[in-house]
Length: 279
Image (cartoon, rainbow, N blue to C red; front, side, top):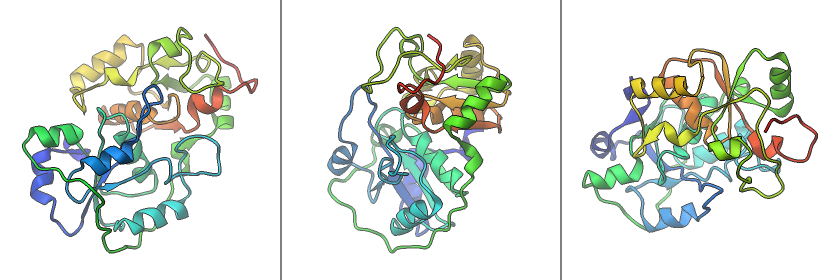
C-alpha cells in the first residue's frame, strides 16, 4: 500500500543518477524548536539533493507561514530546480516526517503525478550506509513545469467557518493535545488558546515512528482511539498547515480520498479576530 507514496533508501540509491529524478530536502522547523533547516542541508544532504524552502516557495503576500503558492510561482520555482511535469521527485526531511508530507501535498495539489517521500528521511539513508555530501549543489538544467492547481485541496477561513456552521464535515487538529485543550500556550505569539469548534484531536507524531508512518493496522487503531472516522469527509488543521498534511497523508494511505487542509490553520484562526473557538 505504501509503495505508491514512499521509496526506500535502497531504491533511491539505485536510481539517484537517473536523468529524470530530482531529490529535494523539504525540511521546515517546528515552531516549538526553530532552527535553520537550510544550514543543516548545507552541512549534510543526500548527494545532488536541492533545498526546497517551503516558506519561500509559497504565497508570501499573505502574512502567514508557508501558504500554498499560486500556480505561476510554483511552476517557476520548481522549473528552475530542473523539474518538469514528467520528473520523478523524491522528497525527504531531516525531522521525523514533520514537513515532508506538506511538500508532497503541495506537489500533488499543483497537479504533479510523480512525487514520493523517502521513507525514514535522511536518517534512514545514513543508517543504510549511503553517503552524504555538504555544501551547495549545482543547479540542474532548468525545465518547464506547468502547474494545474487544485484549489479545492486548500480551504480558506470563510470556507472552514461554513463547514463548522454546517457541522457535516469532520475537522481534525494535528497539534499536540495540550495545545488543542488550551493547556499550553501557542508557540506563535499573539494567538488565542483552544481549537476549532467541533474538531477532534489527532496529534501528528502519534502516527509516525522513525520518519515513517506506522502500519495501517496501527493507524486504524490510533484514529479509532481519537474518535475519528477514517472514511468520513475531513478537513485537517494544525498550527500552520504543516502537520495537517501528516494527518491528511495518513488518511490517504488508509483509502480516504476526501481530505482537505485548512491552509491558514491556527496561525490564522487563533488570532484575535472574533472567530469562534472551543477550549
